[in-house]
Image (cartoon, rainbow, N blue to C red):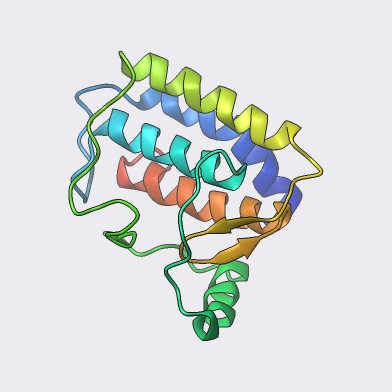
Length: 154
């Protein structure tokens, strides 16, 4: 899949799959409920635009290995965990009033990500400094990981 196709998926197509999501939908793995997952995905779009910032947790000498994974077709494994300094061991409490509000917030944040081009290079706490195209690669891996978590792409 090209970067343009991944961008199209992220900007529009992925939201079609969310029509299958509801408050009672259980994840195949992990501790987050559907709304927590959406708010988590939203937060990492906020990281990509620089609105939310975390310190780099990966030693610089390991960053080339992480970038290699980013450019590969390998997906995140089930139960992949962010560093505890970023997310902690338990999911964050929900912040939005409803699942529908979390979806609307995510749509707005994603639109803002795509409208912010030229996009500044921003820091991901694990992958390090990422340019716009690298963020598209990471968001694609991240979104499909969580859509698979809730069996939305199967």
